[in-house]
Length: 379
Image 1 (cartoon, rainbow, N blue to C red):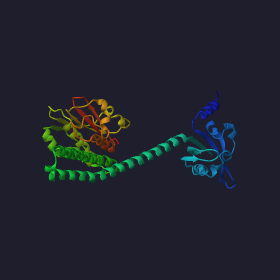
Image 2: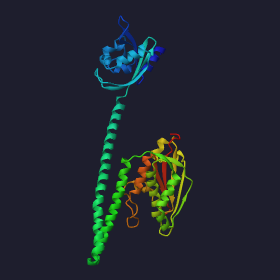
Image 3: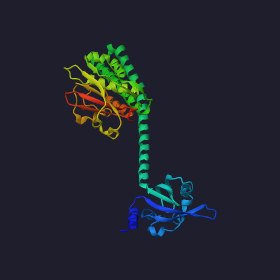
Image 4: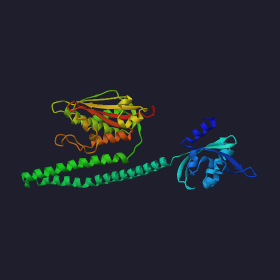
């Protein structure tokens, strides 16, 4: 095979259209068209021809509207001003409806051009954009519904509790034992519903309210969390050990929600015959420690904050379930709560660009792992 044949085979095997154009000028020296001098097979397939059919022919014969859709002007500028161009163009004429990336630059007295058909990529991109738009609209509608429903439920629940208080305080002597118990059950149900509505409202607000990040002393934030939980810690005689913690960028209100839920759970889910022991520490994890959803960002620096306890633990086969709203592994009679706390933790971690994971064994406690990106260092 000769060098020319090898070069021709190489050009025709390319996925991009490759061709060389010679400018055609009028008497005033102005470019009026371009003539094909070298053409590969990929370009010829756009007009269902062999490359030989295009050689020596005017560009406008095979692609007439290129002179009015902007491509000709780009070619002229690249040729006369020696200014290479690269553009994305929707060629919707001359029997074509294709998206192309076009690159053109001067090559001696000619113009060297390549273009790549990206129509399929564009179709997928448009489908993804449409899907994302639909999902965003759906999420916004759901969040708005949750907010309105939660907010509007607060008032009738308050009235229900107020009427129950009146029955208990003013008509207790007139009520039979069974009726007193019925009022008590109504009151307890209203209280549980109020807590559920409040937690639902908190969860729905996480996605609709965005506050700027600020530099946070994690040590001070955890100290404030432990202060808020002082009564529970004292009542359960819990021992909480906190290792030195760094500063980081984040939203203090949201991170406080996250760690307060984790510490409160560590206190709550304890064995009856054992005092809670909780360890909070922070370190930089190894890339292989990152949860699956962060593996693609292993080049970034993350801070890992661990909240470990000696509680009842759980079987790790339920690991994904516990971070879903209203999911509970234990009965309501044994442990209070609405089952939304860990869903809030997951949402807060995601809002910060991180994730939450957990390792646990039944009867041997649990270690919740909060991965938060360290902004300003390696990303």
